[in-house]
Amino acid sequence: MIYDIHHESFRTFPIFLRYAEGASVAPASIFMHLCGVVKKKGCYRAPLFDIRKAAKPGAIFCYLVHIIRDFQEDQNNNLNFFADNLLATNGLNSQMLKRIAAGSKIKPEFKNLMEKYYNLAESYQRKSRRMIDKISIYLEPRYRLSLEIIYNLYLQIFERIDIHNGRFTTEELNPSSKEIMDRINLTISNVNFKMSEFTKSLS
Figure (cartoon, rainbow, N blue to C red):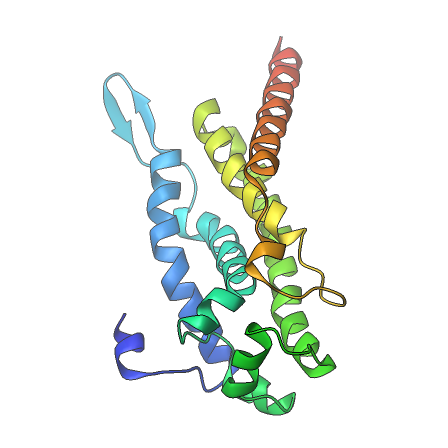
């Protein structure tokens, strides 16, 4: 919030990354803490893992997906999350972004810009998957399911991003209500199956 008050853009990509981490990891750490607390004999104990370390990859993955998905909406609301140095490197400026959001032709330079953010999101997506698998043994089934649902709903959006042929519109990148419910049901089925197999391995 302090950054937003004093700045209207991000001068460099590293500055944007620091902003993204600050904006996303703190609230995600609270959620991760609530997922990881353990209740024993009427008392709650702290999670058995580093909550900030556990929250970071998933939080930044979700944040980057938000930025790509909401490109059109953000531009219409005069919000820009693309670093100035990357815009300049690709021969772009804020006015050109607004025209693309309004429906003008998408140029290779804009695809290159989006690809930078997409590749970073993909990296954090892989890290997030590994982290969820790593900490799942410390989570109660209901909290593990909550984490899996959130991850898979953002993954569903990420899978819709087409760097080379997409239009990056709100309609294109948002799943329908049916698609969302189908993904939730599939996630529930997969998590229940994994928990069943884990329980069998212990018996």
